[in-house]
Length: 402
Image (cartoon, rainbow, N blue to C red; front, side, top):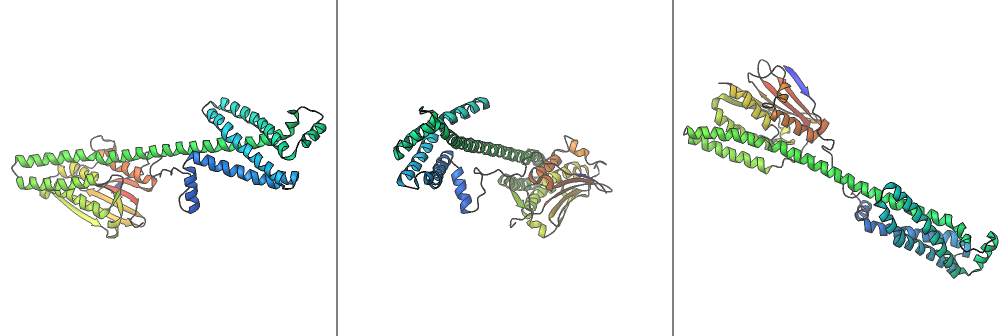
């Protein structure tokens, strides 16, 4: 037996890939659910982080700056609270709208606006905090600083406070832009993955459903012939089988898998239709492992191979046509085969995949496997001796319990 193997590649890099959830954390525990809830709404996220950030700044200020200045007196704690509120209001009411506007601009303009706004707001914070300090501690500090710096200019004595306020606002700006760009990137990635998944689903549905008109045409043509020959009994039998098969085909989801046992029952309906057409010219053998019957397979995955065998092998024979269907479990792999004894199998089976007429069903099978399993599957064509063609599919052995 000469074997030609093809390891099909996934047609899309997103094949088999799962789309990320709308939130960036994996659901699982209370902490993960809380983070999912937090990141699900940008407005909520902003205010939660804003309150948490400036509250942390307040406690840090109390234990550091205020302790050095007033020993954690009521005045020093009041000044810490005022400093935190000034920062909170500056970033919430003034900087946030400016940064929102800047995010809609080009990178150069955004950078210019962000730096300018941060510097101006840092200076404004220094002015307001200086007045707050004077309110809590009196004006003696201002006089001592003027003497130390050798100037009575109010704005010049604020220069020592500018680096601290500038650092605060620059840090806030970094977090603001960083989180916003992360959320934007996350949403765009989720949309891209969703689009890829929908495209794959549409491709899979197309691959599954494109075979139905082909099969339906052949069957209706056979029924028409029986009617013309006044063979009402066989025509009615074919219509009944056709109805049951099409009901299964339409009810089964192309994106879902079914057990091999259910798949074989559907294929038996299809084969009964064909046996009505060909009578004694067609014989079917099954070689199915018992444990393989519980394996999950794509719905109607074998039907194109059987249809191909009937059209290009059995239909060319006057007698003793044989189709053999095999299902074996080989460790973690399920091997499925559809073999015939037709006389016209080419010496190089791969040429069938390039034939626009005879290769539609086989290419369909190969592409569906590639979409569903990626590198974890194999599609092989083998020429049998002395005559015949064998189509072999290999895929991961999966069951519903797994």
